[in-house]
Amino acid sequence: MKKLRKKIILGVIASVTAVFALTVLLIYLSMMWSAAQRADSLTALIADHNGKLPAFSEFINSEQNEKLRLYRYNEESPYRLRYFTVFYDENNEISKVDIEHIAAVNENAAAQLAETVREYDKSVGYHDDYRFRCSDSGKAVIMLDNSDDLADVGMVTLIITLISVFFIIMITIVFYFLSRIIVKPFEENQRMQKQFITDASHELKTPLAIISANAEVLAYKTGENEWIDNITTQVDRVSGLVNELLTLNRLEEVEEISGIEALDLSELIKHTCESFTEVFRNKKVTLTKDLESNLMYNGNPSQLERLISVLIENASKYASDNGEVKIILNKDLRYTYLTVFNTCEIDPKTDYTHLFDRFYRPDASRTSATGGHGIGLSIAKRIVILHGGTIEAVPSENGLFFYIKLSNKLKIK
Image (cartoon, rainbow, N blue to C red; front, side, top):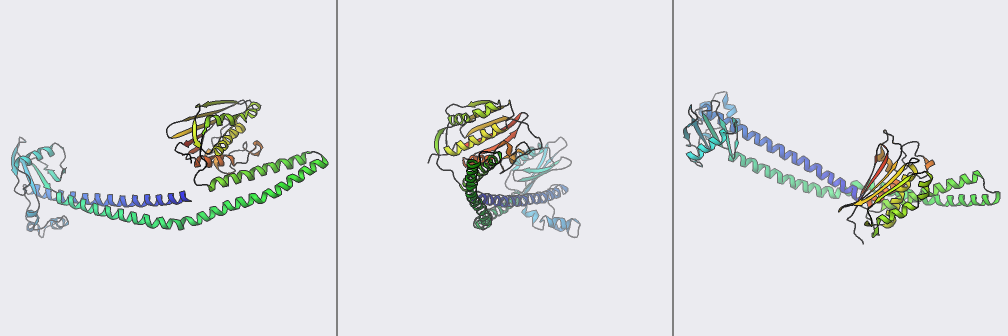
C-alpha cells in the first residue's frame, strides 16, 4: 500500500504541476502576444505618420479611436513612449536618424541597430527589448523601446509562477494526508484477501491430511488400485497448491527484502539445473548454460533459489521435445541479468504478459496435465520485485524468452 499511496501522490503532483505549468505558459504567451500587438500597432502608426507619433486628439471621433484605446494609446503616449526612426534614401544609405523621442541611444547606436534588424529579413520582430518595424517601402526602420511591457510580462509571469508553486506545495501537503484515507479501503481489502487466503489454506490442510491418511489406510487394507492412486495424486496436487498460495501470500506481505547475503549466483544456477537433468534427458532437450563465472550477488538465498527453480522448472515443462533450454547470466554496474529461453510453439494471439498472473494458462497445452498450479511465475515475479528488478516474457519465432533484471544495490544487513 505504501507504493500505491506513493504512486497516487506522485500522480496528483504531476497532474497539478502540469495544469499550473500549462496555465502559466498560456498566460505568458497571451501577454507576449498582446505586448507585441500593441507595439506593432504603435510602430505602424509611426510609419504612417512619417516617423512620428501623432497626437491622440487627431483620432477623436475616428474609427481608429477604439483600436488605439485598446492598445493604451492616449494623450500622454507621444510624450511617454520611447522610440527612434532611421530613414534611408533610394540608394539604401542612411539619410536621417531621428532620436528625438529616446535618450538611451545616440545616432551611431541607432544606425547600427537599424542595420542589424534589416538583416533579419523580417518586417516586424524583436531585437532585445526593441520591437522593430521595417516600412513596406524599405525607406524607414522604426524601433520602439518595449522594455516596460516586457518587464510587466516578466513580473506577472513570476508572480503567477510563485503562486502556482505555493498552491502545488499546499495541494501536495493536503493530499499527503488525504491519501491515507483514500488508500485505506484498498489496504483493508488487500488485508482481507490475504487473510482469506491464509485462513482458507490452513483450513484445507486438515481435511487434506485426513484424506491422505485414509487413502494410505485403504491402500494398506485393500491394496493399491487406480482409484486410490488418483486420490493420492489429487491430494498431493492440492497440497502443493495450498503451499504455493501461502508462499505467495507471505511474499506479498513483505515490503522490503530481508536476509540478504552474498552468494555465487552462477553456482546456484548450476546446482539447480542438476535437479532437472533427468527431465531434460527424458524429453531429449539440450540444456545450454552461458554463465558469467563466479558471479557474486547480494540477495536472499532461499528466494533466489526458488526464483531459479521456478524458471527452470517452467522451461523444462514447456520445452518442446528435442528442443533447447538456454540460460544466460551476466551483470553490469547497476543490474544482474538472467535470461531463460526454451523452444516451444508460440501462439501469436496470446498476450504473454499475463503469464505472471495467478492461475493463468495461455492455451490448452498449458493445462494441469503438465504439472504445476499456475502460481510459480507469480511467485517468481514477486521475488524479482523484492530484489528491485523486473521480469518479462517475450515470445520469439522459436520459443519464449524470460528476461530477468535484478538490482545490484542491495546491501547485506
